[in-house]
Length: 122
Image 1: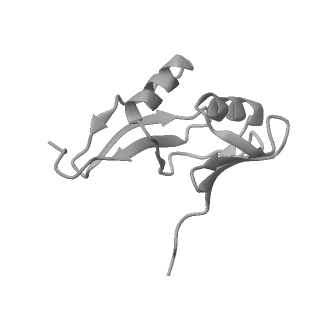
Image 2: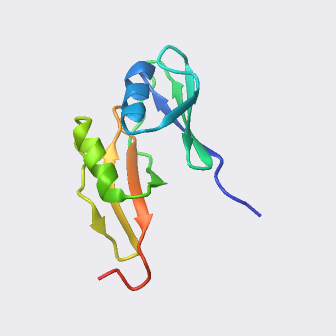
């Protein structure tokens, strides 16, 4: 039986730019940093990793990482204050979460979400 996801690893062409992006959103660096080829951030009880890839290695839309946050609207405001433009505004979804989407500098789609209380979807 699978117990959970330990980490998600995303590729980047510019580690320093990617590290600055995630730090600005409040992710804590546990290993690596702007000058390394691999960086690991704390994401609750799991990890979000970055791995440097050569410029000629390209990728296209692959999916989305969904990260739970304590307050979706506050996190959205933090993204705006850092100068980032989320692709959606926070909203309540019919599947029972409040969320918004933000694309990182390498094109990875991130969803910041929070479960809604039962009966609050409407």
